[in-house]
Length: 235
Image (cartoon, rainbow, N blue to C red; front, side):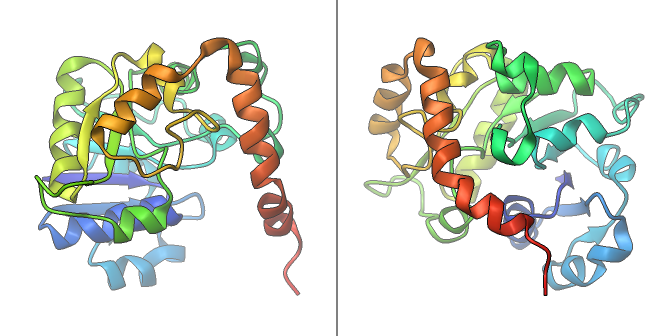
């Protein structure tokens, strides 16, 4: 399969590395241009490209960038990209890092908002797992306690992502439509817990939409020291 990845951070680079090992052709882009990631791409076995090239490079395109950065993507990024190309959103909203985004503060589901900005529907996946777990916790299908990942979106697009997750070594769990993907946003019971499929389904069911502000604040408070340290000028 040909896969484009927009974002070469922890999740993007981990997915690229694993997919190349599985035999897929990966095009990797970031915000600073292909020259800045040629070394990483060469190490992984991917091709360094622009974001526009990544968007048009394959059957699946992964957008894995900070939530605020979605607003900086070209408005015509997916213009001319066939409707059957699946776009995966791995993003999460952290106000400390992203600044306040009014639509999300007012209750809009994060990936619904992302899809509106991109001008096409997305599938929510890979957002509730740390990159280290994504890199290290793959297991063959049928392994007891295999880590499960939720996937939310339209049925046809979601089916392709469910297969990719199983291939990567995780149990895919259908988490419903995109509007319901708030159940896997930061701070919710399934977030970064590395649960197996039965426990993940229970965690998704236990999520309470009225508690989204509480979930978000808890996750943001926990991540705040990391984001503040990352924002400090390098010596």
